[in-house]
Length: 51
Image 1 (cartoon, rainbow, N blue to C red):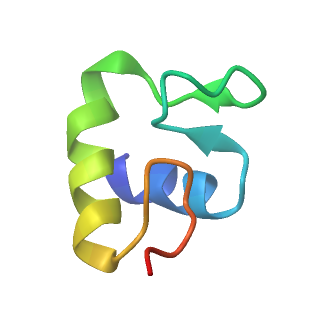
Image 2 (image 1 turned 90 degrees about the horizontal axis):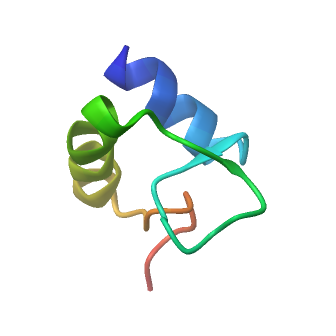
Image 3 (image 1 turned 135 degrees about the horizontal axis):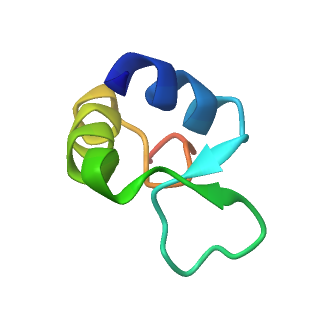
């Protein structure tokens, strides 16, 4: 499930950014795990590449 939500965040369909009200949030129980994978891959909570 984590991998699926990571892909959805990268596609702009979900977010882990609680301040982003324009996109549906990743489920609370998976939030930390998805954010961790995104960070390891070099992306922020919205799936944007970090500088």
